[in-house]
Image 1 (cartoon, rainbow, N blue to C red):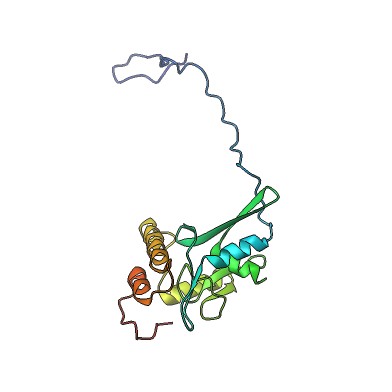
Image 2: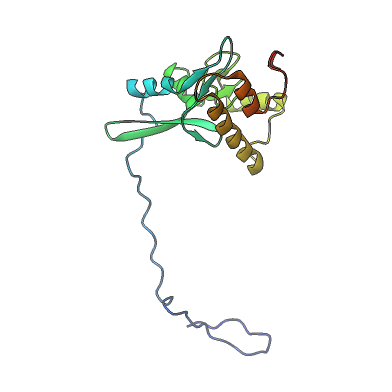
Length: 190
């Protein structure tokens, strides 16, 4: 037993172990994944078909909204092959399928809709992190990833958007879910 520092009364006290706490804790074994993971696993034809089955297309030049799983406000898709799995953001999956997701590339939402998977210069493009941040600053949407309240709001917004269009495109429901209070016949800002 070791001695603790002198108390305010000037006496020395010994550490007294609590019942059941006298043994040294054993280190926990490293967490094991339930299945092997490979970040280079290419999309399977089944994954591509599943991806497109979860996309609702707005008419004209509108967004293509992901209606599958959502994590942190962005769509997520997981696929497996040969007992190995991979998970990717839905917008990055769209770029991957198109062959546009190169090393260091990210998906930049020019339409500012986190659930959009439409590959188009007005919607989703392969970009760099610095270019994406510059665009975010220009659009006034910075700080979202640093502020947990706004990150939660992005997630809640994405859930509402997914729910609004899950049965097919509905412009009014989409506008309400995404917080757009402009009349539907007004052109968007971008």
